[in-house]
Each structure stands twice: as structure tokens, then as C-alpha cells.
Image 1: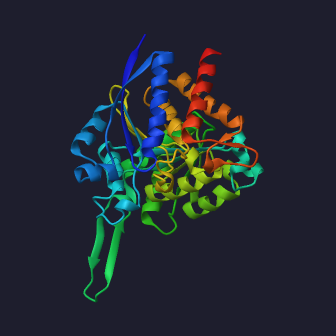
Image 2: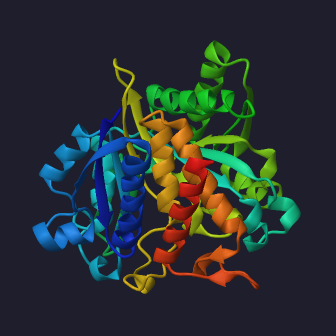
Image 3: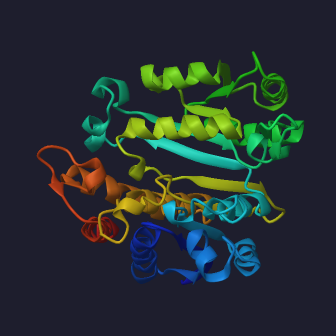
Length: 371
């Protein structure tokens, strides 16, 4: 029986339209092969929206994002728009989506596929079998705190101000996501902050401890200062399972963790809101690789992170676990045959384009669906 679910696709800038074009083929595959239909809309975000409308995100597109079951976003930004004011830059559109959709929890998996162990800059024995999840608080902290801005001082100098601020409920809700995730994985959470020098970090640690004591004593909880966590991620990353941290440190640690896998072009992410009375939540899914303007329009981008982001959408927004398994297994199987895009190219492997990689994954999905 056919069931429709709603998606808003936001291809954005740079390589965004190319990788979104390929994931659209995957969406169509589920309708043809599995009878799972998605009601799909497309919109503009980022620099392309600024060029068309003078704003990185229109009110109309924002309203559509709030109305659908899930949003898929590819990438925003590029040097073309670097000289715009902060509120006009492409990234402001993404920040508005996160804020107005109340997407407070960002999930960034870092998983090393067996076929890509040698693609990492770390030794194979350090990263083989790596599978960690970073849960980053996304709508608070220094990126949104007030006061903020740049001001002129009487002595002729200038001052830049950003404010790091967290309230109890913001810490509890993102920590709760981390604890719940851990229960489905290896039952370990490491909370990371800078409580030794920052009052907001001290509060973070205290509130995570309080929540753990009240609701999650079955989960193993540890704490690590953010700078130490950065070091341990490259020294011994497999000691971690779920890491929960604030907006700023989560931004840094998750990008660091992404490179353990061999390429930032391999990694998906999910940004989730609170569950409503019907058990649904606002959600936005996006690869972490950025817009890569230097290769845009050349059929060179790696579409795998976009595919895996859609797989996360299948799991988290549509509860289609088996369908997500097919897509993820197809990716792993194709990589095991030696096909590589340029960002993950290795000696002895076959370099392919964006479209050929997508073709290969879709063919593998056909095989898995009939197995």
C-alpha cells in the first residue's frame, strides 16, 4: 500500500544541487521499488536565495519547512557572498531554519566503513571499527547568546562580543537525547565542556549529572574537558560511544571526528526538535561537507553523505528502519568494490564521478531489494 510522506528539499549552493539531484533519484527509487511515496517540494536557501530574493531564506520557504515531515538540505555558502552583512550571508538562512524549527539536537555520526580504513590519516588500528555519535546542542550557546555584535570604542579600537549562555532546560533536553541514544548503542555517554574556566561549562556539567542521577543511572556517564576530548579523538577515538556537548565545542569536535573517517564528504547529520503529542518532531537532515565551490558543477562531488543523511531521515522521521538499512548497506557494498570519488580516492581503486557513484549505489539497492 502506498503511503505519502512530505519532504522539503533545499539544494542550496555549490555542489548542493548536484548531490540533491542524486538523492532525488533515491527518493524516486523507494516509490518505484517499495511503494513508499514522498510528497516532495523544493525551495531556495543560502546564496541562491539571496540572489533571487535578497534574503538567504524567505518567509514562504520557512513556513514550508515548518509544515513538512522533514527537510533535506544539501549545502549553503561560497566566496561569492563573503562580503555580505551577517544577516544576509547564506549561513544565516541555515541558522534561521535551526532556530525557528527549534532543532536543538544535532546528531553527527562518525563511522568508518571497512573499505575506507586506509583512507583515514590515522593508523588503521586506531580507526578500524570506529562508530561514535556526537550530540551537539544547536540552538543555544555562543552562536545565539545576547549581547553580541561589533562596536567602536572611544579609544578608536573596536570590540567584538559574543555571549555564551545556557539555561537548565536547554542542557537537559539535549542530554536526554544523548542518554536515549546511548541506551540503543553501547550505553555510554561522555559529556564535554570547559567547566574549569567557564561558568556555563560548570553549569552544563552539574545539570548533566543531575539529569543522569534522576533518570539515567543505567547509562555510564563520564566527563571530559573539550580540549582533552579533542586530543583523545585523535589518540584513542574508540573509547567514545556518544559524546554530548554544547554548540561551540560540538561544532569543533564533530568536524574533527568527521576526518577520522577519511573524508568529510562521507558524513551525514540530523538536527532534531522536541517530540510533539503525536510522537512527531521537526527535523532537518544535511551532509556536513559544505558547498565545495571549487568543484561545483563538475560532477566530482561525493554524494554519499547526502544519501546517508536521507537514510537518517528514513530512520528518525519516518521510522523506516529496513529501508534505511538497504541504502546504508548499498553504500557499504559499493565502496567494498573499490569505487571512489576524488575525496576518498586511494591507490588501486577506481575513481568515478558523482553520477556514476549514484548509479552504482542504485544498482546495489536493486540487488538488495530482490535478495
